[in-house]
Image 1 (tube, rainbow over the protein chains, first blue to last red):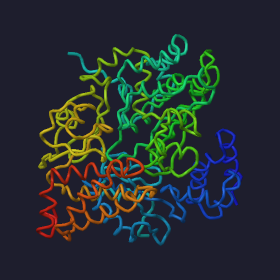
Image 2: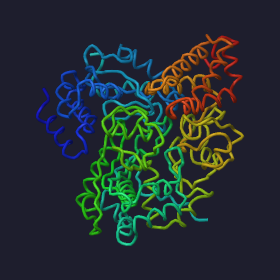
Image 3: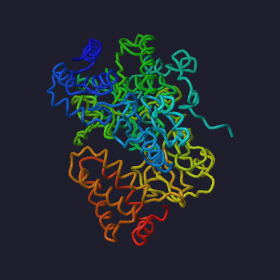
Length: 158
Length: 427
């Protein structure tokens, strides 16, 4: 069930937007912010509020790469994998993250602390190689800097 | 000679707090809006923009005033009109609009309100990519301030003009930056492109006249209205008016964004502003305006960075934010990285793009790993043609083929060496 805050955010959006369905992306972003991801049940609850079918809403949800349809860890690491970050060694950073966290891309650590993903160009080419954890941008990254940044989110070895 | 003017960035504190409303006003902010609402008709604003030679800064370079002129006038049709600021900025290598949205959100909002006035729109959107959290938060806060100060809302500054402004946070996907994909996204649909024509100035958001304009373009508008078209034209070294936010990234000493006169030579941007190549590496080529623009070479460095000269050299100004390829970086590897991006971001709507881009990506991967075959170069050449203009529904795949086509021309020897030696010479 959607929370009262989530329902109010959807209703508020419907009052401001031209059509109910144009609220759907903002609504899913809001739900994800509360819960980390958007579940099947969330979609089933949200769709009728927007006059959409569940499958219609699902087709929007799965189109957008940053609407997560599966649970993620407490913190989501988004490593930029585009041109300037590649030139400046993002592959080494990725290998390091994999080793350090013991997971591959798309996976979540056993303690549920981190999910590791890549993202197209973060628009931080002047800080390449760059990554974002939750809503915070980091760069330019060295392997040492990555260790230090990760320890700020709790020790992944613990 | 006086220092060149930098109207778009002079008040921005890099990495610092954004300008608040009072601070923006103290630097002349919202005086252009006051002037336009009290002294100019919407048509006169459009004429001023036309006279300024402002061209779109999002990549296509279409003349801005001409585009606004395509929107039917209020006395021709009573239908609603929309203004959309495109802050999706997902072209790899591009990070200029982020600087403008984060650092001076009111400058953008004033441009949005002025553009809405010019086309008589009553609702405007600022569309911001997901990853730009500070830009989103700063614009939300600025829009609230502007509403409270009476710059957004009903009867703005007593003029009778009404406009609402919505700040829309996106959820990823490169296709959102394509203007009709963006419109579908705002309507709550997947961001697939629409067939063109009809173009958005006639048939846009919910089928109504809509102008979609890049952030940097809109940020120029208050300055043009305040200082006049002639002033704006004089900022430029060439025929295209204004300054340009140029970017340099890759292995240079000081990558960054630099506001310079339109038409500043490439060499000056790289050597003086980005302080030249990093120690021990040499420039081999560059993508002048994002990853969809064909490579330029060393021999092009003295060209002015503007629309006309870059096009004559076989590339495009694009977003004006260049990525440098150096001699220590494998061009095949770089192309593999680019085509991975395009294959991933293809919306899957049309077959050449959906099937062709992953094929190109896998072929490049094989060549890069030393598993390429001589006939692979013919496969790539063929895809450059069959994913090019006229074969696909939108510009994504042709944009993906432009850098590949130029790389196969300029760096063909490197591709051949990978295949003949069975390994990447840079490994």
